[in-house]
Length: 137
Image (cartoon, rainbow, N blue to C red; front, side):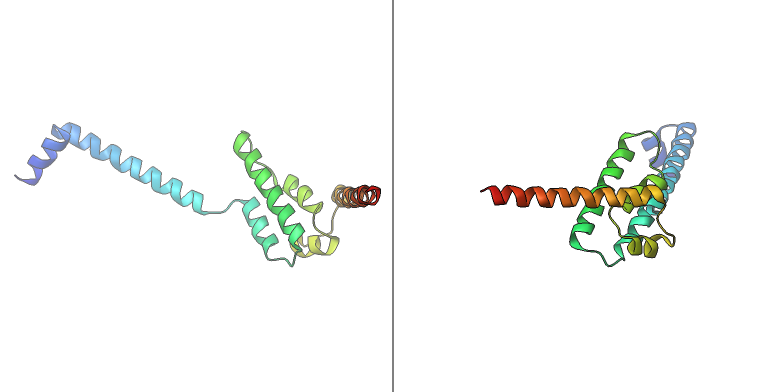
C-alpha cells in the first residue's frame, strides 16, 4: 500500500484529506499557543512570587496563601480578572510597613495602613477574648 492509498483510506478523498490535515494543523497551532500563554505567569502570580522571597512569619505565610487562594477562586468564578490594587490592599493587611516597602518599593497608602491596623485590632481582640475565656474556667 502506498502513502497516498493510506491517506485516502484514513481520510477519504483528496479534498477531505486536505481539509482534515488543514484543520488538524490549525487545532495543533491553537493548542500550542494556549499552552505557551499559560506558561507566562499573570501579574498577580508575579506579585506572590515576590512575596514568597520575603522573610515572613509562618502565620503571615499562611494568611497570604489563604488570600491568594481566595483571589484565585474569585477570579475563576468572575468574568473579569482581579486587579492588582485589590491584591495589594489584601496583602497590606498582612504585611508590616517594612515588609510592604521591601515588596512593592513604595509605602502603604491610607487604605492599606487602615487594613493592617484593622487586622491587628482583630488579632488583639481574638487574643484577649481567648484569654478572657481561659480565665473564666
